Length: 63
Image (cartoon, rainbow, N blue to C red; front, top):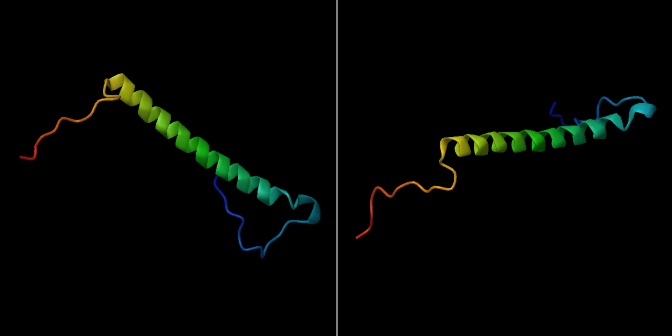
């Protein structure tokens, strides 16, 4: 659930004013968490295929 703070034209009642910033912080945390999960899945895929830490072969060389 990613979010922004919006324009400010619609605001909650007084006792719910912290809900907007808390929801925005939750969106930022979820963005970071999603990025970390994607990179971990990519890393595990490279480890399983045996390609982690290897450089591609040079197909040409300068003379």
